[in-house]
Amino acid sequence: MGTGKIGAHRAVTLSVVVPCYNERDGVAELHRRVSAVCLEQSRSYEIVLVIDGATDGTREAILELAKKDDHVVAIDLARNYGHQIALSAGLEFCRGERILILDADLQDPPELLGAMMAKMDEGFDVVYGQRVKRDGESWFKLASASMFYRLLGRMVDVEIAPDSGDFRLMSRRALDHLNAMPERYRFIRGMVSWIGLRQVAFPYERHRRFAGTTHYPLKKMVLLAVDAMTSFSIVPLRFASMLGMMFGLLGLVVLGYTLLEWSRGNVVPGWTSLAAIMLILGSVQLLVLGIFGEYLGRMYMETKRRPLYFVNEIVSRDQPAKDGDLPVHRLQEMAKRAARG
Ligand code: UDP
Ligand code: MG
Image (tube, rainbow, N blue to C red; front, side, top):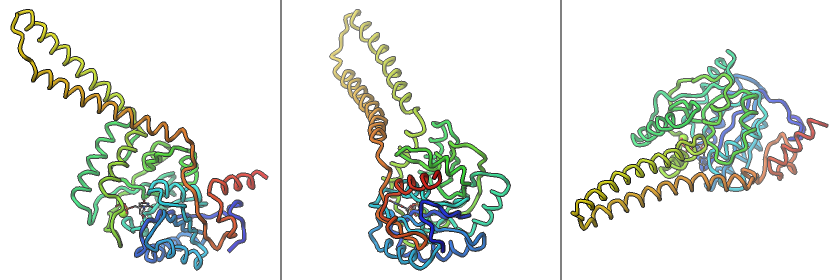
């Protein structure tokens, strides 16, 4: 393949971007299936595998692939940054005119690429997968996901399709818009939806994981849900003041009652009611403070303006090794300079 520097990006028609955590047992199969579908589309494709601080040998497996196959670009992140950041790294780095986002576990079949490309040919900028059936996921995951999407739908002003994950095909211009959004708390499917342009749902059946187990235990699912809500909506802040107003009104009513009873002379010991009121108010205040804290904490983190991630190395037969030592944002600066000069 070419000897071009990373900076002087060689044009690639198709990029497949895959964040990979501990996926050792799936990587080879992933590479085989993705290569096969890419070849049907174009000879100039790249498979961008982002190693998100894997600890189980995934890293070695991917680097091995990158050494053998010109089409593979391995981006080894400096540590585990989480799914959405790892994906962002791959998206910033990929060069394709069209970009497919895929999970490493093959739950979303890459074989749908052809049909998604055809859909995009109709003039769409984003073709996003929408799951009509999900194999091998617990009822709890299904129920919580469905509840989450319904709640999110009520709270936010952009439309985020229920049952869509990050599995989607994007045009270069849509991706450039996404890459221009610098926030740290990233809920990528929501951000893509927020962009606008022409987007269309692509119904498909989601399969079981090919190997390994989910990296989204309940805790991470809840965190993703909180990110989604706080980064797209200030409704929780209003919820806080509404609660405050409601309990304020309630307090006035109770105060009226207390004064009335006092004027009639039947003052009750009143410990129970006082305690109850204090408990309720106390909990509401804490809740409200907590919600404030969520936003405040995020503002604090955002104001640091740190890069989203650092890269340990980039391995690709297409690129000189020494560039691989630079973090991606440095490479991109170089790319911009090269494009200008
Ligand atoms: N992933 C990642 N970093 C993480 C956790 C997950 O890059 O910290 C990757 C993982 O390898 C997979 C994708 O993100 O390719 C989705 O993760 P997973 O399949 O565990 O999520 P689920 O499909 O169960 O929601
Ligand atoms: Mg999965």
